Length: 254
Image (cartoon, helix red, strand yellow):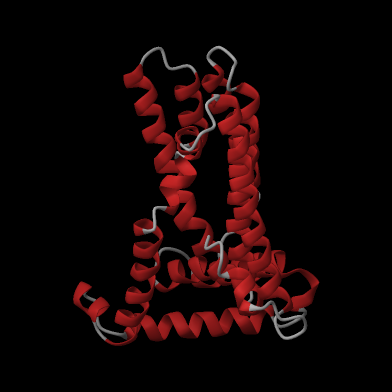
């Protein structure tokens, strides 16, 4: 999706084709934003799961900073926006190659076994191999035991009655949904995404008359957001050893 969207947008002969390219690109972003945290949650140890998801967010912000920087260099170039979208092509290729070598999620493999979509013993052995690839030498000889625990958990879940949509509004599910929806709501109503998307236009309205100046100032905005993500990662990693005061993180919500 990234690759196709980037190429279609970069070589778009008219507005309609460009919008189609952006639409395809947006689908790719949406899939990545949901699949990456899910993969991390299913494969990473619980002790570093939050850290890895924070790192994902950090690299997204780092990409924003790079986008602002490249945009500032191309702002006065004729058809420079095409180069902006084209820059995403090699990154999409690198991402695709990296995904090709990722081992499958052991939980996903075992779920297939539970659902009768493959041979139980073969999928179990494959899950053990994938878990060893993901955890490395630190897992030791406990890979088989951990796979059996996941299998037991999935078997127990499979025995429960079919889940309905209404259960989202009850018990622990309601609490989780309220927190998740609240975070998204406050992120949107504060206008934070719009500020990032239209930073250059906003700075032009604020007094930076030249488009190049406004675009370069946008880099500062990206750096401030990157700074915030760095503090959050440090807070997660060093919490308990070098606690980060909450007032440092609050001023620039990301």
